[in-house]
Amino acid sequence: MAVDAMNEIKKMREEAGMTQKAFSDFFGIPVRTLQDWEAGVRTPPEYVVRLLPYKLKAEWDYENKRPKTSESTKREG
Image 1: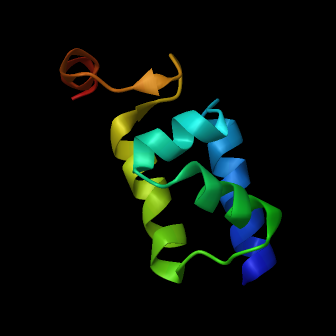
Image 2: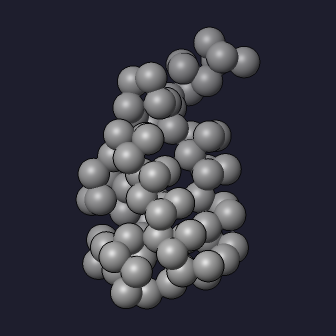
Image 3: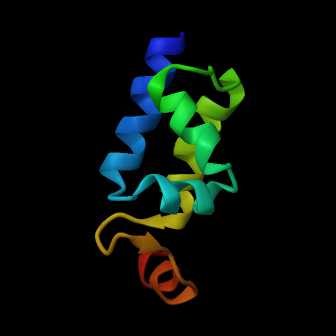
């Protein structure tokens, strides 16, 4: 699970076009914790790995590489 979680989190962050700092701020995760997860030093809880993509899909604008605003949500909905 550790290697899968490490790769999955890093892939999510890169696909969203976020730096480690931006990803950490977006999710409220300490940067050092994210760095440890991506390096395989620490393993994130399994529920975290499952929940991160849901928040990204709901609140991240992949096209513009920024959090969704109420305006962008209205246009989609």
